[in-house]
Image (cartoon, rainbow, N blue to C red; front, side, top):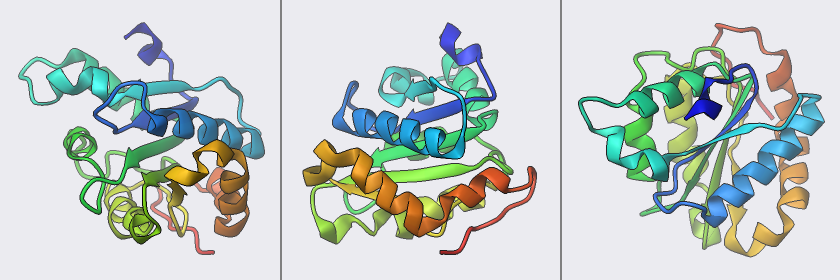
Length: 183
């Protein structure tokens, strides 16, 4: 967990219950693309919730607490999840429940969902965006939704989303203020 001591950088939070998932690979690639477009230094740090799952509900959870602190101190946070039952994973929700009200206050967050079907591409907008906004995150008007068929083209899909969502405005968002960037 020593990598989690680093703050003020790009942090990728992966809510897939399977370690080393395609969601992780896509999220890390997207985080690098967005960071580069915003002029943020790399490389970033990844929090793999699959590795922390045994501690999420434990009484003693030092690694989870360190991960919560790291995400809350990020310069840019990418929160990624596969779509399960038309929403984000329970593991991601349980982790984010570790924050008190406005636990991500003023943190620019890119919500990212990976789905098998275009029918579920809206899950990020319908479920993940409101959760992150409730925590006080600065979020774009729409989540980055990647279809499994696009996983070989993450850069092109991320660039299209970046340009359409005005996510670059996240970099200028004042700290401590909740803001939804409109497209």
